[in-house]
Every structure is written in C-alpha cells, then in structure tokens.
Image 1: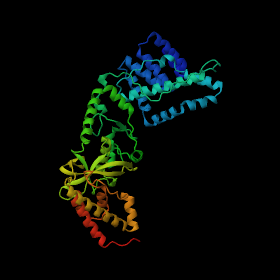
Image 2: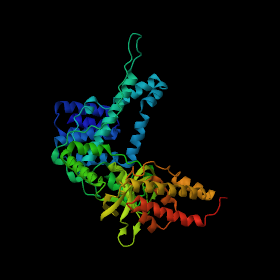
Image 3: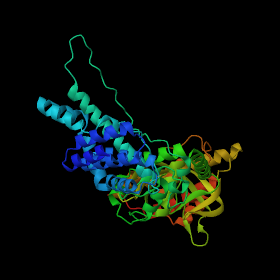
Image 4: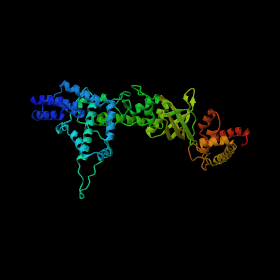
Length: 501
C-alpha cells in the first residue's frame, strides 16, 4: 500500500513516469489485483495516454467484471474515441504519419529533438503496452470495443515505426538496406469474441429487417443494405432514418461497402450469411427470366434494330433499370399505354447499350430494339409492370412464286421509301439522321431474321403516324401485309410532299 500512496503522490505532482514505476513494482508482486490496474489506467488517462488507459481498464475488468468505476471510465473513453469529431482527427493524424511526412519531419529535426521524442514515447512502460487485449460486452456495444482495439493497434504500429526511424544508424557500405514490406490491403484484426455476445439482430438492416447484404454506411452514420438504400434514394435524397440530406452522397454515386461490418458478419455469422446469399441468388434468378415476369416500361412504341433513348426519372423505373443491369440481362420490354389493360398486347424487347447517371439520381439510357413479343399475362412487381411474354415472329413464305411476288413488292416499297426520305426538308432530314441514324440498306434475304427487313422498322419509327396504326403494323406476322401498310402510308405523305429548301 505504501507504493500505491507514493504513486498517487507522484501523480498529483505530474510525475507520471515515477508513478507508473511504483505501480509496476506492485503488479510484479500482485499481478491479479484489479485495484492496481485501475489506478494505473487512471494515471495513464491523466497523462494523456488515452488508448493505453483504455486497454488497462479493460484488463482490469477482465479480472473483476463487477468493477463499476472501471466500467464507467472505459465507457467515457470509448464514447470520446468513437465520437465523429475524434474519428476525423484520428484520420488526419494517420495521414500525417505516412512515411513521406515522417521522413520529411525527421530530416529537419535535430539530434536533441529526436532524443526528446524518444523519451516521450518511453513514458508508458513496456509492460503496459504488452497487456493482453480483452474485449468485453460493455454497455452491449460490441462494435465500439472492437473499433477501440483497432485504433490502439494502429497507434502502436505508428509509434514503433517512429522509434525505428529515430534509432536507426547509418548503414555501412557492405550492408543492404532493408526494404519494408508494403501492405496493399487494409485489414482490421479483432480479438476473439464469445459467441453468446453476438446477436444476429444487431446486424439487421432497419429497412428490410434482414441480415446486412453489401452494407453501406451513409455520411450521417447509418448503415443499410446497398439495394435498400438505393431504393430509398430513388424517392428522396435523404437518410431513411434521420432524414439528413444526402444530395452530395447521391451525386457521387459511390456505394462503398462497409468492410468492417462485412468482415464481422463473415466471421461470426457465416451460416446466416450463406442463407442470405442463397435468398439473394434466388431473387436474381427470378428477375433474370426473359419470358416470365419480364419488366415492362410503359412509355412509347419501340421497334427491332431501332435505337430508343430514354430519360428515366420515376423511382419505379430507376429500380427496374438497375435490376436489369444487376441481373446481367440488360433487357426489358417496352409497350405503349393502353387505357383498358394498362399496356398494349404487343411490344419490343430493348437492350441497354449505355447508361449515364445524373447527379440527382436520374439517368439517360441508350437502348436498341431486339425483337417483338406478345403479352400472355400481366403482372406487377415493386411498382412497375411485368408480363409473361412469347416471341412474335413472321410467318415464313415457302412457295417460290409467292416469294418472287414478295421480293418485287419489297423492292418497290423500298425505293418509294428512299424517295420520300430524300424529299424531306433539310431540317427534318438532319434531325432524323441525328436521332435514328441512317436508313438501313436493303437486305438480300427477306426472311433471314424473325422480324423481317430492318429498314421497315426504321421507316415506321420516323413516319409521323398515329401510335395505334403503328401498333397494328408491329403486331403483324406477315411481311407482305406490313409492306402494303407501309406503302399506303408513303403514298399518303407523298401526295402533298413539298420540295427541298
């Protein structure tokens, strides 16, 4: 007890090194006495060695879990260490402790300054730094204890690096310079936590109420599944919990996974994570079908081989486009609106060639038509329409005589279409070329594709015709009937066609 009183006296005189020496002598004789560790942690805390003090407080609690004062002090330190202000300062200090900055500082330091920094680092006894790391359930917050442990490890490594640089001697000519190994990946090591302290509900997303899958943490500190957060930001650029504005976060478009949380789930909840992945894979497989529950964009008419640029701003269609990308199909259906059934019975599958996101979450999607389809059954999923579909293909002409007549009709209508397009005003001509591209060339084999010649669909897209009339042509399975319809339209527009400017 005399040494303890002497240590208290040294501490009151701000002679912390002498106080710690007295307490070290006590712990050497009584290594399992919690009281002496509590007093040593208190002195370290007063001396400014907060991380070392936290470690000794935790060691004290490992010897006596009911030590109330040690619990209170440990909670205070954890609260201060993990507050947003202190975390920001820690990150700044980590940046300043890089090898480049340390080298630059050491070059301008004198020998006396080096010795002084070395003495300051030796303030904490080696026995304190070598205490076993114990993680307890203080206040039920597992993540805070692990984060404090990680901060302590980082600071210890930084101190060791500085000591090595300060005490290093000039190399002789025959010696080789040791090149330090560089860690390309940042890893966080955690102590062993008893399984009974890990509760799966602590790792659940507050939106889907399931285990975190690709967890993303917002600037305000709340964590959600990546897909859950994206769906919420489709509706409003704010945090789903605290309503903090996330406009800048949305504009960056970076949904970086919270690696610490992901590693903890992988380590302590492997069974639950495997089940979560299995459910996600089943959902992706269901969304990947191109015949059942195909997503339908209800907007305008689209045609095979014809570009169809889209401006997507509605939350339901943002979700639909994102899912089309995630599944890898990059396809969805396009149908025109129908007042009775919601959307028409016929449409065209579109393929996403390019996708550009705008800062506010909207997107410009460059698509092109793939093939026609017929709707078999309608449905709804998460706000957007879906449908079971089947391909719509032209009926092949097998008779040679009929094929010759079809070829003659095709050539006549194609030449008529070229004449009409060339007779357009320069203004309209350039706009069509910019939006739809040039008119496709005439094809040798009329029945090579299931949808017939590409120029027919290009012409149908540029002609100013009523959508109902265009839909009737889109639904035709006879190339001959389609050519007759197009010929009638061209004849009508050619009667009052004005000459070029």
